Image (cartoon, rainbow, N blue to C red; front, top):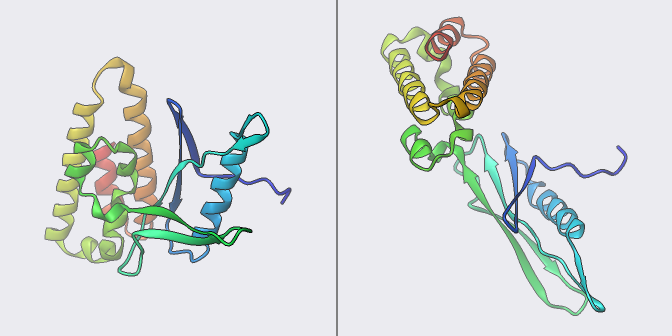
Length: 191
């Protein structure tokens, strides 16, 4: 409302800036929004060298919580500068459903775990009526709980474990809001 640009996350690790946006739906304006966000981030960190400024854009990506066959691997904006030079601004996309639970733990991408339930979103109702499918889901979450406990054991990681666990339950409760049995099953395993 007041013209402020707010990104999902912008992190500085060492001397590099990283910008990650989360999307749960395919938004055709995302490429334009990304270049807008990244330009604002680059402006904030612009440095003056004598009479020239240097702007460094962040390393960016869009994390798609839901994706489909039309979700691109890159978002692109063609920028035509006043001198006629054309530069393609290319932002990679990360599709959460391409990450198995094993790959999530292998790459230590624990922040993906709360959204893991979304890969089952279309089958939640069927799972509540199909004991084999439901048990397979519960087995997945039992394995997630065990691996999470192993990865985050130790007094210094207890808070992270608790926060991730709460978020996993909260998002599963939302995705499974119409399926009490599934919601309860995940809650009992993770709880």
